[in-house]
Length: 290
Image 1 (cartoon, one colour):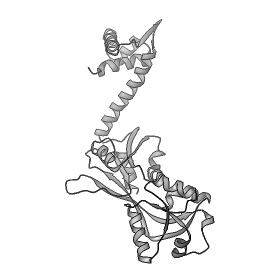
Image 2 (cartoon, helix red, strand yellow; image 1 turned 30 degrees about the vertical axis):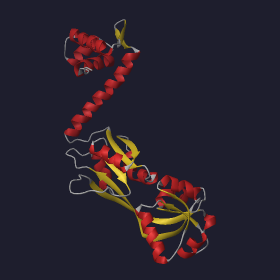
Image 3 (cartoon, helix red, strand yellow; image 1 turned 135 degrees about the vertical axis):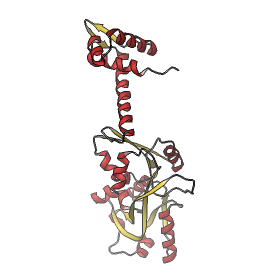
Image 4 (cartoon, one colour; image 1 turned 60 degrees about the horizontal axis):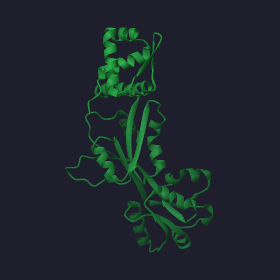
């Protein structure tokens, strides 16, 4: 498949903007005949008429309107390329963020809030498994991967790991489940628990705590997805072992309360990046602020 000619596209864009061949030729600093030739060549390549004459005005056809929108994006991308490689951030930055599918949405939003609220930055969010996301990162289709566990690596692995947050972990549930001034042993004896699935760092720390205290919890449900843990505790399945940030909206509304904070348990959050000659300036902003 032959490629589009950038010069033809520039001529088309000028005519579409000016609505007139003569003015477009003057703007481009070329002869009107050259502009006409370039427009005809582009129409031949696309297989559609891009303009229709209305007196002295060149009006876009339906195909022309589609082509104009695409041309605008193409030239904007070209401007972004020049600015990026020149080391200037400029406006219209795009940052592509991958997040582990099971990661807390509240945490993601809190971390990305400075960029989400910036009208000059477009945030593209993707989720998946850690293997999929690291593959996208290595292929330069992502700028950063967010996870709650750093990936395994060795001397040949290029990842850079940034510990961006460390959240406390609590037992959280409906107010009706919480006796006054209950200690850990009383809570474990009285209430079923909703726990992160085995294999997570928080679950391993909790299991060690239970063994050390000689406690045998009743497990109502297990899930490796923060969103599912949130749903289960909202449904009053039991007390959930989660960082409070996972259910911060429910805590603020009084729908859920913290039964007990476990000071020895923490959930770490990580940003995984690759060394780049041309790092994304938007990424540097959020990494430096955490």
